[in-house]
Length: 229
Ligand code: HEC
Image 1: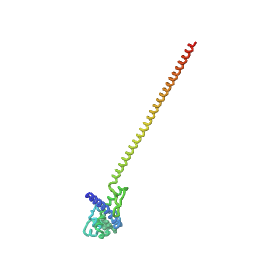
Image 2: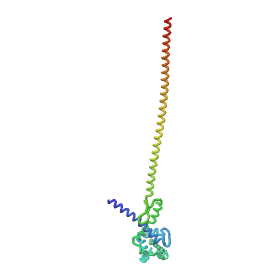
Image 3: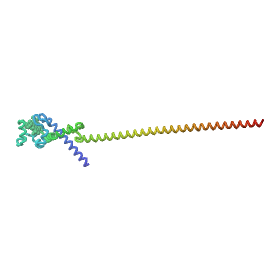
Image 4: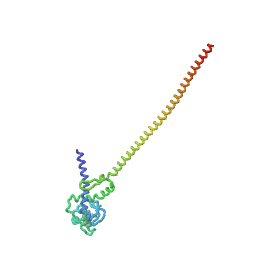
């Protein structure tokens, strides 16, 4: 039971993780995309490195109210503002704290997610509660692929082995059949010879007997006649 709860907690954590990113992306497209692209300068700077450079807290404060951040004397906030000719980026005090976090999450994860998506371009995507999509098994597709390939290899090897065995069996049966036939033919042949020989002998014997009898008979009758003379 405890294990199941642990798994559920882990899963919900995982899902919310994906959800933050998806929500942040949505919020970004609604509120920021008019002036910002992630990897290119637009009205404002590209945002793919800002969290790495300035940290989550700073980024959140900037989005919430960049004016206040400058007023507090933040040197970088003033510098970037001057770099962009003091163009005013609006404040987002109307966004909830959670929504600000989601946007920061999106900014922070964008490069990683993009790389993962490119790496798993062919991996199936599953819908996630909240409308976004996450790539399933983000870092696993290669190992899954290897597993699949290994299974396929094993299966084809087994298939080849079975084919080999089957062919061997067929060869064995046909050779045995042939040798059996040869053996039978030889034996029959031998028998045939024997029978013929026996037959010849039998006939010869019979003829001999009959001639012997006839000769005896003849001798007898000759003797009789001689006696009568
Ligand atoms: C009307 C255009 C506009 C909109 C909309 C806008 N920004 Fe900006 N943003 C700018 C400008 C221009 C700058 C450059 C600094 C300045 O001039 O204040 C800037 C700077 C930034 C910076 C600092 C970048 C750096 O490299 O220092 C961040 C982070 C930022 N914007 C995030 C956002 C986010 C997130 C949103 C949406 C919630 C947003 N911006 C909406 C125009 C805009």
